[in-house]
Image (cartoon, rainbow, N blue to C red):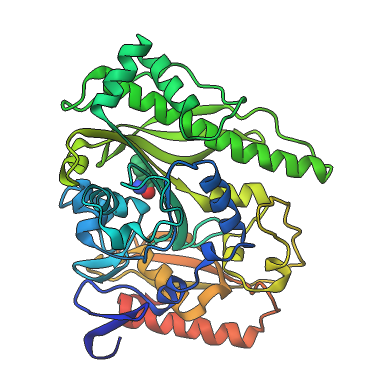
Length: 447
Ligand code: PHE
């Protein structure tokens, strides 16, 4: 970040007091895991794309977006916690690494509404939905977070958006004489692939704390919610069935059915909203937030006569289960013992190669008196010093001195390489850098 400029993917941006994007994170922005057809995340993305033939497919939108796109366009309040510097990687006050694929909702709808050729040309299957009436966006997203086997500050999502002309819904409802059957018919006969196994959960119940928007008629919202749930059920059944096939052929126990449940949720850009959970090998897996799109987004996009639903699906957690990958860092490994195990279109169980021994270090310190310490600052500092050699960082002890009232904490840092045995000397050198920057940048007093 020489002289107040930061280079990201070939463009440079002015920095300011908001800039908190580290070199370790910038390094991830150019990796393009979704474009490597044999990478497990790309395999999963392709399976999802295949479940949605009538949708425009995007997977090459760059991760640098405006705060307007990522937050304002979606109705995030000015003081929404998601905007905090402790949670988001800012390039500067107005520019950031997208924290979710929803950042592209308004942009892609508006591009469809005004037939913006340049943006529409980025779709991989141009003619499927020429006005972006329905689309998927697969992309890398970034969030400041803790460090452990299932958290990584870069991960991947697939956004799904489906809109209808309000008149189309009116016609469907009139013809079907009932909302649930109309949505079912639209989902079953529509552009989505046919599926026999999709079992809908109970009829859509819209709870009191999860309201229908005043702009929507009840039948409209129920239609959208039903259509969304049917479509998402079909997607999940399609993917998991593929995984069970893979496990059958490798002689392992197939999973049973795929029960699905819908938990009321809240997002600034949908109402009503849900979290979809799927039971897989006995565990409830939270895979995706979703809901009826806030009408102001469609209005702002220049399509006030349409309504829609959206989901945002996280790829890593499902991929870890489907492929049996137990450490999220492996997705970023270029070790051939990892990459050579997968092939396009195929879900197979990853065979863990022998793990190299870890090296563990503790660091104890007094918190700064002003109380400005945030754990995520420590996480990024360790990532900067250690890169992917850090496996986990966790608080193991905390106490308040009875007389002075000062707080002492101890964090344990596990270092481990994916592809070699680390030496105590090299880890000591890293740990020294960590301790040094903790004093300089976090203002702590080492013990
Ligand atoms: N963007 C939300 C997230 O990342 C998920 C979401 C997408 C929710 C679309 C509703 C609609 O958590």
